[in-house]
Length: 359
Length: 278
View 1 (cartoon, each protein chain N blue to C red):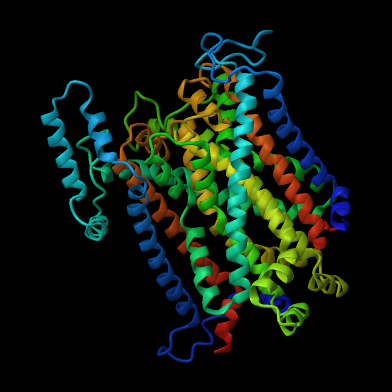
View 2: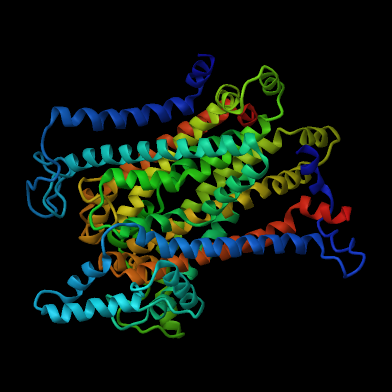
């Protein structure tokens, strides 16, 4: 472990020199290929779960749904027709493996079915409208929160004393407030009491989404609170992890040795930061699912027009195709983000680089 | 005993534990003293705090204070049950994967990683949205079943580092079988990690329940802190300024998770002396 970690002392861009010729796959490429295979497997597992889990629960959602759709006055003849058309649309008159293959084929054609609550709108259409809002909210807040949190955590570990002593309990408290609770507090403080920011939605009702200055400034105003509520909690969580990793690194032998040699503090911090960073990247990929989940619920607090709010509405109206479409889109996004993180990790991790040098 | 003594020395552990116990005891003792039904409507919509209703009333005209205390009990219950289930499954899988190794490890570890990457709340949504009414126990169980991979991962790492230790070879020479070794030679050595993981699982279980309730998938038979928040949002408590309806559950959830995390940090510093950073 120790010698493995020390390897980061080598300059970063030493790979690709070792490739003798183009015939053999480079270890990095092999690494990516291995990851890719793994994610394809997970993707199918996720598809299967998405298909299978709702069917696991006893009871027939279709009949409940037909009753709900038909409302009060419909005759039984109409109900029967509705029921049969749904059975047919879901392909429920086939054995489950045929249904599953059918489902996979449909997903690959980008067809997620028809929404019940907004019949006859396609689920894809609804989700395609919602996804940009969610991405615009989550990607910047998670990335920026991760970067700022890591810097803050490393600083706290290094400075110790008062800086750490006052900052740590505060950060721990902030990060233990769930995203949506923090969101509610911010919403109440800035939207209701101080009344300086909008209390919900992605943009003012009076406007239609266009790329005009008026719309963009309006959207930005609506963006600020949800963004901040995610950012601050993520910073807190990341800072705590990084602080711990950095304290651990600061107590290692290589740091003591470097200090003995009289290496400047600045340089030591750089080494410590780099070494503590690797577990933080892995940490990000592991906690990404939880973060995304928390952020989706934060959308509900602000009625932000993203996937989370749509999911909330879909659940309230028992719109199963929309629920399943939403969960599938979330899963795929998290898988994609994790794959990207793995690609970056492969570039940054000296151990993967070192295996390249050995070839 | 030695361990307990060093734990008590940790201020963080003590503070965290006392807050948690105080909240737990309040939620357990209060219903014995005050037998009012938390679901009984005693006033009008969003009545502000008064002498009669210390924390006012909610959107159904129910007493917020009583609801809050029952909600806390519910949330802690979900957390404990979910945490217990997750820890049990995670420990079993982690110890077996870490100790047996080879193909078994490969299969178990891949499964663990698979469920780490697929967001567990997605599975929770898919399972609970198909049910019209959800009992508290059902929610606690499915939260536990979906959150074990964290524990499995941590326990596996600890176990596989123990695998080649002397005392395990000794046990093998003494003719102990794998099951006995795992039970008596491995479990005691990873127990501190398991307990720390359990504390975190309780916190994350409470958050999962609150999150599900916010989505409208909470327990349909009892009040929880999450369902209180969900109603407050749905009935515009925030925008109409009825702070007493959403502040208590917000503070409650935050305080419970904070106490558990603080407990965990304290234990971490005791069990990993390198973290103390003197």
